[in-house]
Length: 105
Image (cartoon, rainbow, N blue to C red; front, top):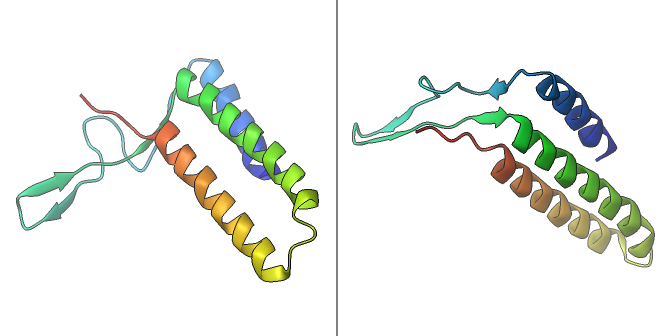
């Protein structure tokens, strides 16, 4: 999580100076996935100033939770410890997906 927070600081630094970062698509083009010719789904990740700020919040708080949880979960067996951190990482990934989701109008 410390690496994720560091990467989000670098992304926020670029966005703070006026650029917008697009991953896996850009507005207008997207990455279409067609199923049966009826459905077209475009997806992408965008970092602008608002999502960059939320990116720092999610990764910063996630890092603090991971650091605290490492000592709090020390009494658990290996399976419980691994399961807890797997669920915690999935939750942080879901939050990052929500924060970075591209919206096209």
